[in-house]
Image (cartoon, rainbow, N blue to C red; front, top):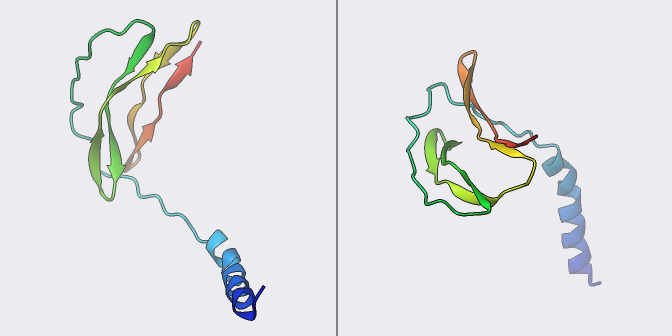
Length: 98
């Protein structure tokens, strides 16, 4: 290794602990999400439709279109949704349930 490479690598590694300890701040919305957009997909054998949802991104709601997932025998898909928690709204993800 050259002296320059060693110096750059050393400087980078000295910053790693500071970057690892940086706090992550998640801001939850105070206003409820807009009405869900109703999507009417065509039936697709062997797949389950996961309806679209609103996500929270940079202080506003953003629509995420629905999509198909391969069905899982013995399981049922339950969609997620927004719920009020005090003064804020939180999204609870959907998932597979028996």
